[in-house]
Image (tube, rainbow, N blue to C red):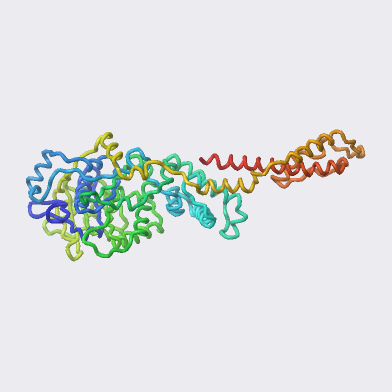
Amino acid sequence: MYADEKILIGCNENTCVSLLPKLANRHGLIAGATGTGKTITLKTLVESFSDLGVPVFLADMKGDISGLAKIGSETEKIKANVDKYGLAEKGFKYQAYPVEFWDLFGAKGLPVRVTLSEMGPTLLAKILNLSEAQTGVLNIVFRVADSNSLPIIDLKDLKAMINHVVENKAQYESEYGAIAEKSANTILRSLIALEDQGGNDFFFEPALDLNDFIRVNDNGKGIINILDAQKLSLSPELYSTFLLWMLSELFENLPEVGDMDKPKFVFFFDEAHLLFDDMSVEFGKKIEQIVRLIRSKGVGLYFISQSPADIPDDILAQLGNRVQHALHAYTPKDQKAVKVAAETFRPNPEFNTEDVISELGIGQALVSVLDENGVPGIVEKVDIVPPQSYIGAIDDAMREELINLSELKGKYFEPVDPESAYELLLNKIDSDSNLESEVAPETKEAVEEAIEQNHEAPVEEAPAQETPQEKPAFGLGDIIGTVMGGSQPAKGKRAKKSETQKMAERAASQAANTVAREVTKGIMRGIFGQMK
């Protein structure tokens, strides 16, 4: 951000190209092959938005974005560009920027957590790569949880709910349709893989409040929220779905603001192809809707990828501000990508856009931004202006110091495990089992007396051909079997019992029921306990 209150992007011998703040929420694209300078462009734009007082979110895929938090240092190349284009007179100065570090795994930033209820079954199904049938079962699980006020906060809640729905499917199928146990088991197995990716840390509380991303510091600079994505990038489904969830939440919760002098918030989506790879039609329409309408909420979206061909045409058409770094045309596929990139620009009669894209040097780019009337400007070949912060990564000690100084550390650092579906279902089991009831002393005495009399009482012998194996007239196994599975003692002639014995058996049955409930509780705790 320089003195003329515009977002300076790059210059050549004849002109400088600047982005108008009031049109920055018309979205944009930064494209180019690896190593051509996309990160420098990204940092330059982010700094300018922060200088404007606009908060920013971006992901740090390689660790080098963290240098935004450190004062820049002069290099020979930076000095040459500053002198060549008179940047010092335009307001260029080396400085650090206000940065908040975040990390889904809590290692290199404040922990980012989201509850599964907030994420919802549709986005979760995307993370888990579920089929349509499996997604249907997952939807039923969330519907049952919602209708029974059972919050699904974390993965153990979801596992408990899946088991609960399957075990009680006869109760739910009449309302929600068939519940396939095979699909439920597949979901459970997929959750194990999600746990291995760090799902137990991510799906938890306290959940992220996106309003904490939309802040300025005491000097009026927009806070730059940096999500460490070095580890997260190894789980592309989790990465892309989390960012899609953020977009959805911003879209659904921010108020309409109409036209503004500058954006309220700017969101940079690095490695954008991860969002669109193998995307279903449903998700494609959702993202298209968000991109088209979220600018009315004051939010600007900037996609970063190697080629414009990585972005669906319907979305690409809505990205009015574009920076294209070099693309290599080594293969037919590369040549097609270069052609697509060239066709996205308004031609400049001074050069052939398609030829120039392959000839750009590191730090050079083709740039086109919207003019005052919202019309794409003629493309210009420019040198990207250097960032004012440090180029490279900060060390771990500085990162840790900044994290410890964060005013949000007390809010997010420590995890919280509230009462949710897992605990509520266990409480229900305890309640149904009448755990508070105990066998009265007189009942115990009656049982002992019955057992003693059962051994001493004379037995009326049955005919020889029908003589059963010798066994007690009643047994704890029979009673538990009856309680647990509805089974009955084997049919056949039994020894006659006295009234005292019959009375004692009824007392023993009551005692055994209590024992059976304890057994039931133990089994259920075994089932749910494994989900922790």
